[in-house]
Length: 228
Image (cartoon, rainbow, N blue to C red):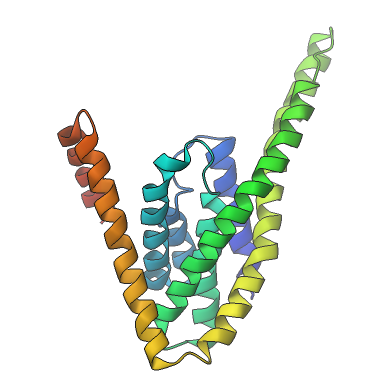
């Protein structure tokens, strides 16, 4: 569990990028999984987990509207679970560990969405109550403190969520992996193979129904080539 704190810190930085920073999309699971996998030396299984989570959330994003899962917490917990378990045990049933990472990522994403909604409301109420004093120097200082404090609040909230969820996810996955049967391992491998396939169909359908499907498809293909 020596990688737990660095992984949680990554979640905090990615949350800052997503909600209080540049919105560079590094918070999306396929990218956060790559970062965590590179950090822990378990790149390929982490990327498998991140890719499945990415497809799932791409699929359900539009029907859910603006209320989406917390992809930062979900992606980090999912990939982090895979990496911690593989580093600690060297579990041969990698597909089962990846499948459990996906499950925990989905759970963490829903849990994180509700926690983020509550903490976000609290942060917004504090910011709405902020009033600038007449003195310019004091106003500048108070505004800086308010902005920095708001950003740190986002970072700390995300770190605490990961520190709470990730050890539980890793311990549960490790315990189940030690008792997994061959048929269950095969089922897990099939599940994480079929799930992205369904998601791809849904994403393709969205492209088809778009007003400019060719443009979006070409842009998506170009980005995919660059990432690969």
